[in-house]
Amino acid sequence: MAEQRNTDQVVVVGAGLAGAQCARALRAGGWQGGITLLGDEPHAPYDRPPLSKDVLLGKADATTLDIDYRHLGVELVTGRRATGLEPGVLHTDAGELPYGSLVIATGAAPVALPGADRAHLLRTVDDALALRALLRPGARVVLVGAGWIGAETATVARGLGCEVTVVEAGPAPVPGVLPAELGGAMTAWYREAGVDLRCGARVASVGPHEVLLADGTRLAADEVVVGIGVRPATGWLAGAGVELDAAGAVLVDERLRTSLPGVLAAGDCVSYPSARWGGRLSVQHWDHALQSGAAAAASLLGLDTPYDPVPYFWSEQFGRMVQYAGRHGDGDDLLWRGAPGDPAWTVLWTRGGQLRALLTVDRPRDLAQGRRLLERGAVLDPALAADPDVQLKAALAG
Image (cartoon, rainbow, N blue to C red; front, side):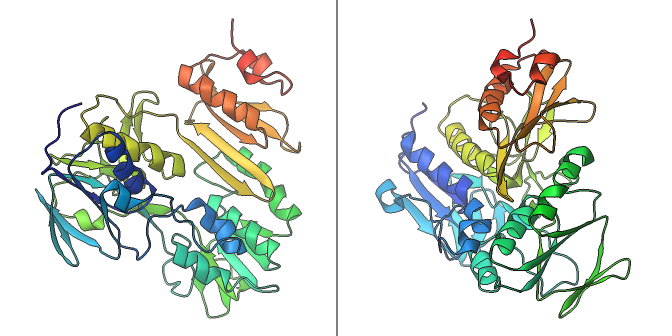
């Protein structure tokens, strides 16, 4: 490890999981200089996945990460927003902060529905607490978007006794992420839960007590929740010299370094190159935030380790645990282990026999073994792999 001077100052912009993990990993790796962790929310860094689960259900009011910043010698600054950047200086709404190195970890912001000012978004703990107070028995809730957040929120709202309608513009749940064949397999979950799922339906407008669809249908709504995706929270970098892609993600190299010397980036706001998957990836999930935060710290510490993990995420919805690992693409072969009507099933994506990704529904052993096979670039025997009674680790070709 390269020796660090005590005068070296690292500023981490963004006090989410990626930023907090970066600060913690820097100290654990022996960084002797100053570390400032800056966030625009008034709260200490917290976990986001429980917001659409335990917080909405009233099982928790906060999900603060268990990190003692004072003990680590990390200056935690909350309620302060980054407004701009120039070499060596971070501009904020409360003045300038000089830095020796900077880590951008400002995450992603939810996409709002145009003209839907009264609709709720679910990204922060304050969002979750505000929505929780409104999810009362009998409340008519319309959710726009049948993605992961939409399904999780629908699950909670039904559990709290709300009347729930989910409106999805795509042909099936999770469009653009999963093939329609897979999304279609999930539609029964909504029906079984008593959720009115309407696919191929676009929202025209949101009124005081209703949602108007493009086909003229009016849906009564006491509350409207929008979950139609996120965008990198990088608008504050305009003119800073940090290269962004068309979606606004920060372009980094395999060490998470940006185009601006001394500036790195991690978490939901980055696009990183992946030799493993053969292209650039932008990932907005918990595991990536955790790993990339630590990887940015490793890069600052001079460790020569490329960042190229197997992507992973999970979603708890309608009494099921859905997990995904890897990265599938157009042209990959899709292989079922079980059937969509089964209580538990798995889908594999392969290319030339090599496992590229898998999605599991209540099959944790498949997920655990599949992740290890993905790390190894394993090639599967399709007949064995399609048999749900054969362990994945025993389904290797040859």
